Image 1 (cartoon, one colour):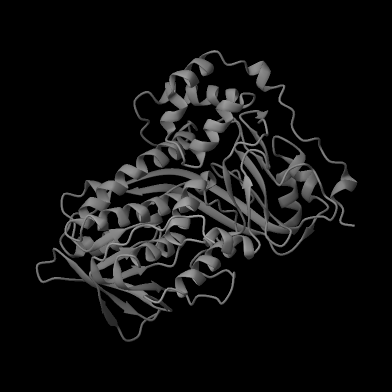
Image 2: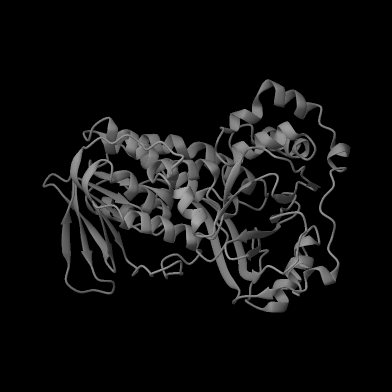
Length: 469
């Protein structure tokens, strides 16, 4: 039985189209199914029949985090999805108690925080959600089709449909719709399409971080009981740049990610280089865990050049009947794990705007989405702009906020209240303002770095502990 309360339904139209089968697209389609008689999800790739990778999601074989806020929204859109994910092999674990986390130069305390998140692969998550969508009687999935343009009214003030064709060319077809939602990702062509229709080019902000990472699946060694379910070793920014994560996923496997900022990342899919990079992390635990573990596949590389935010909320004119969600609106440094959850928040906001009526929904939504993005964008770019080499406009008070953030991280190294607050902000349950409450400010001003250094981490493993029986 579902533990979620379904979102209210408000019929506003006959047909809606979502193009892009990303998680943002899937969640948007699920939301729109409550407000339209029919919903068509259009995807360029043929969808695989199972939790398997596809060309359009090159990062799907890397670690993804659906944060607590994103999972809550998904469960409201598709009641019972938590139970479906658990039945498929996923788990929900306390994000403080189950994770051995090293950050800001100290091990963080572990205790029951009450903040839980899904522990599973992106491939399984997307597959289970797609199955739920396919079960909805008013949702049609149209894969193997590429969106090539928008159809509009004669005066170009309203989007009335989407032009499609098979990838690589062929006969075009047009789908009529009351609403078209762009969930096509960073490479979205909506800016060019709008400009061709006579609208101003959407303003963009880019912050170049040159992040890269490599990921590999491993079999979790039999008898391996280190006291943690996942391991995260983060750098002390901006002096250090490397990050390493072991995520416990379905089928008793580990998904291991190694990466870093400003080009400090594995550059080849080479076994020895992968292990050597792990050896260079600030703590030895990840290297010791994987050096004798059994790999289950090749090393996958991924590069992320820049954060990218399209300011649709600032456009002086925008057509009715169009909405943009997910990475097509704003694409964050993936190391912070905010993308899917921010997409969920946008899908939720789109539903809220539609419940106020179809007229003006596009304008209401793009402005609301712009507000939603402020917090995640500030958190993500604050870390990246902490590197002197990263070009970008620092907001007023950036130096003070960076100092405060570093002190808060030190406090979270030994103070359970601060660690819980940090986890709740990180998982978008609370806004960043929670870290600035009078009680937290007083604690930060009297932080004791020496006490943070005393927080014990997991014991390094003997070489034999990671050998499969």
